[in-house]
Length: 218
Image (cartoon, rainbow, N blue to C red):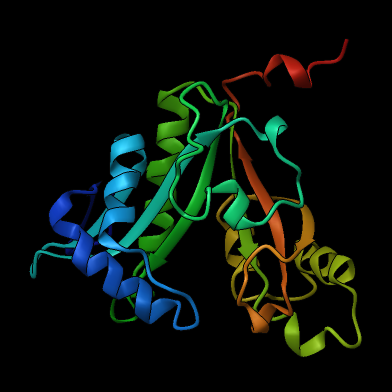
């Protein structure tokens, strides 16, 4: 997909690290932002999977999508983000893994609502196709759930959002973007009171690639 006007999507470079860390601090005020050394580690283990949205007029990095390859059979579907990313280091990147894990996608508040998250996701789907991977998996926050958690289970909430009878600010956008819900999970992120600690595992399956052998019927 072409980037929105005045923006381009490209691979992350070392010069982007300070800006990315600052955007992370603003977007996730309750979490410790990525350090320069962590970003360098991401680039070292899987350079072709770290994408940046650049605002061309200013030359500034304003959004990112970080990914790594994993073999989901080595994990449990309820595993937290810290487990799936080796505490944000991406040290568990598996070059032979058939799943592209979308570890993080965020955009500077000043540059949101321009379609950048969609463009960043599209380029990662392109990577899935290029590397002949089976699917991309991610975790979707449920920031609308905290307000109704006392009256509605997470399963019911996710079912209603998936059916289109309820809108969640994040999950609804993911579903519109072509993702499918796998299941809700608890404790995916350490600090997410808006979601009451819940998230939804989501996936996009590459239609051109069959599932790996462990998922085939025997």
